[in-house]
Amino acid sequence: MGVISRRRLTAVALVTVTALLGTTACGGDDEAADGGPVTLTVDVFGQFGYEKLYRQYEADHPGVKIVERGTGGNLDEYSPKLTQWLAAGKGAGDVVAIEEGLLVEYKANPQNFVNLLDHGAAELKGNFLEWKWNGGLTADGKQLIGLGTDVGGMAICYRKDLFAAAGLPTDREAVSKLWPTWQDYVRVGEQFTAKNTGAAFLDAATNTFNTILLQTAGNTTGYSYYDTADKLVVDSNPAVRQAYDTTVDIIDSGLSGRYGAWSEEWVSAFKQAKFATIACPAWMTGVIEGNAGPDAKGKWDIAQVPGSGGNWGGSYLAVPKQSRHQAEAIELAKFLTSAKGQIGAFQEKGPLPSSPQALDDPAIVNSTNAYFSDAPVGTIFAAGAKSLKPVYMGPKNQAVRTEVENAVRTVELGQRNPAQGWADATANAKKAAAK
Image 1 (tube, rainbow, N blue to C red):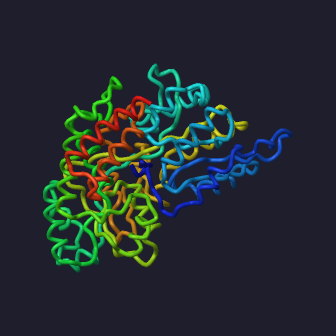
Image 2 (cartoon, one colour):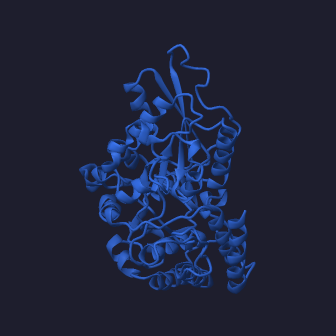
């Protein structure tokens, strides 16, 4: 997923953090010693759309029970705890989700994970987009840390009722034509703001910044905060500065609701229709539906993203070596990441498959989303998924990203001017990378 910051940072409803952070033993530690039932714990962040798949798997495997733990969408809570569990040799689930922006960091310690190549995973290579499969391999190609879940094709989700109140078109094709570029998006936002609807044009500058960055990087350098030699390039990669400058234009135009992404205030803003647009990778549709609630069904729709494509989010499923049920966990991970599993997850929560077979399946190609005014999500998201350009993520990507987005946030809140914000972003990113 992702995803959020994909960050598959999808906070559909903030699951009680203590359910994840307060539990320290993986599921089923005392089970199956005599061949009895096995409980598999799956650690995730956000909404992966696996609930029905779990029940299906349990029905097909009577000796297996599956329990999911999660922290809503907050990677800043999930990832440190997973890192602690791996270092301690206990506490992690039998299957764990790893967001793509953090994968390089975990691959630095491959000894913490089962090598899926030793368990028949090599024959599954054709089930994934090539770059997605390669992302799960260690640098030497000898170990497969994780199997890919989703990718994060981009769009803009918008409130039709708020657009109508501002005198703007509401038809998705007409809306898409309003903003072929991000500069056009700003112009439309200024028109919206001038109508004083009581809502902001967009939710948070950080979400928009990350979208622009990943889109620009994918279409130019192929990397964001680190180059492919793992050199920190925050202050030298033009994609980062371009995304920052465009985001500053959005902030200066007064378009942001200034809701801290993934915060309780942000979640409430969905329910209260406090903003009209949001950067919308495929997995975000599940976030919106969960946060805005059933009363907003049919009020949302999906338009094309300004600029050219892009990919935000996507995750992997891995099996920690500390799992006492490795064989069962491996089979579950294979099932959840199979074409059938990815289709099921998409139908439940919207994460876009990374499996070519799933992307070609009529269940994806012809799919619509009733919540989003029957938007043809198969056309909007899946059509271009095979040509998505991945962005390389370096070893401290998440820590660096957090510092850069924190700096963007200070500008958004008026605590720093743009020059000060950029200076903070680059300086604090270097400190984070050095830790």
